[in-house]
Image 1: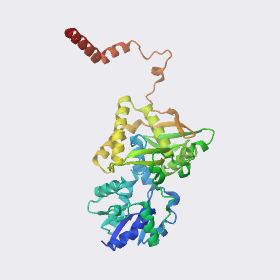
Image 2 (image 1 turned 120 degrees about the horizontal axis):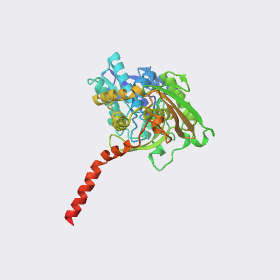
Image 3 (image 1 turned 90 degrees about the vertical axis):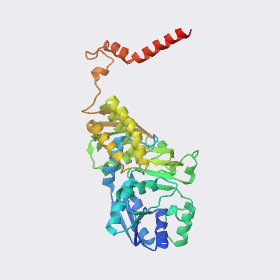
Image 4 (image 1 turned 45 degrees about the horizontal axis):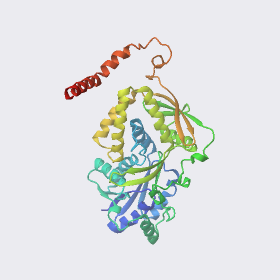
Length: 403
């Protein structure tokens, strides 16, 4: 191999991988970083990659594509892995993989390397996406080949070879950040009895330190896609950034989760997802107003399957394409406005309106109305309860025969 494309984040693992790949394969390493909203983490990234031994580095601004083609479809689906995780790392990996494949073609590289460990989900996500996009590309996963067995070993390797890294033995958390979330794993978080320290939070104000007065936020949706905050139309990236700030200031969006990894291991992670939490709750509230009962309930079942597909790395699968078509159909009337109350870690929908609302005050009222006939309920209950009645009659006759 003359060239290897490396998925580069500037973190501990990918920094030492550059040196290791050059030693192991004697090839040119081209670092590729997808800008998905990491913010200040990208500062000096180019310099660090080159100092670590990369021949060159691409930093691709994919933020808008990330929001429109990856975040919005998952938001519309309502997918949430194991009832808590909003999939921020999961749906970032297929976009990063797409970028890696495109640059591999541009550079004439025959292999792609990543820094995912053999215990994690990301190795699956990267490699399934690469197989779907170009099955001829070779994938190199150093964590499955080298002798390094821990983050402490990795730090020692960096120190030995003079590789610049920001992780220390004291601050040893593994983190992943993008526009949608910031995840924290490792260190003292590996004990599920250990309460996460407020010191690790970077997007969210600890709820006890949040403002003493609630903040109200209105979010406008068109066909399931958020388009405005507090009446101001915003482009996709700015919209999420705005909600991250508003929800984060009010302590909204921290999740501590022991999750079931695809490889069979339970892991503990802490996720900060302030804007995403607000969007999920608002979107769900609008669906309750605009989707009829069976469609809403079926879509809730689909969301579980959809979450597993995304979590397991099957973003480019045929089944996901089919589910997307169903979900897009359900979103045709999910247009309207939701008002949220943000207060000390709580995000409470307090109002919703839509031109496609199925809520009919004349039918729902406890007051007098001329629309609904209470007498109609009797026939409905008789028919709806007929199987129960028939079974009860059968059991009664069976008891008589037995007695």
